[in-house]
Amino acid sequence: MNESPPAPSKFFAGIDGAAQGPFDKERLEGFLEEGKLKLDSLVWNEEMDDWQKLALVLDLQVPPLPQLNQEKPAQGRLVLAFVAIFLLGMTFGGLAIQYVGPALAQDPELPIYVTFRTSLMDQGLVARFQSFGKEPLHLKARFVNNKNKNKVDVVVSLAPGEQKEFGWMEGWQFESGETVFLEHDGYQPKKVLVP
Image 1 (cartoon, rainbow, N blue to C red):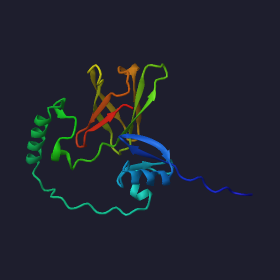
Image 2: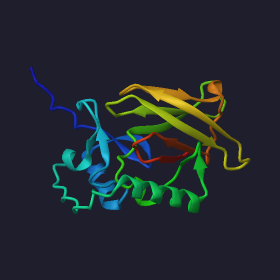
Image 3: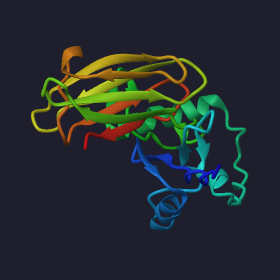
Image 4: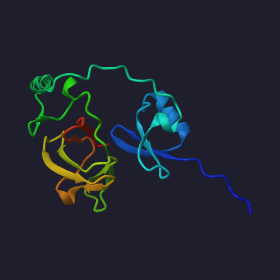
């Protein structure tokens, strides 16, 4: 009996805050060269238990990060956060929704991918929130229509590895060009543009 060679592995990659793919390793290398992906970008396929850094999948060596002084007092970080929030002027439930400077620089990236699909009822787009973390998440989410400035604040709760959808049936009809802001204590905030 002739056995056919195994099909080449295809991977999904985190690009612009959303899971995209599948792509073969050669295409991932191309994205790396183009600057669309970095060595620490996360990729996944069905053969993997969890998302992994691109450098590991491509068997590349990642240079060590320079040692940063991580012994900064918490009070100093808090003061920097409040100053940055004041200067940016953008708050969400009392917390910054975009980059707030050094105060959050050491927080890990939010372990979530956001993708969009067309609504089955032809009512705009539906957002898919996919957790790839190991802990439950309770996300503070703000959806903003950049044309008419309408916005809504919701909480999206996800178990590890869980996916949830949010669309017009849940109270928001997504349109291209809108913005999704996501926050969770202990993680860097995430901003996603609706394609």
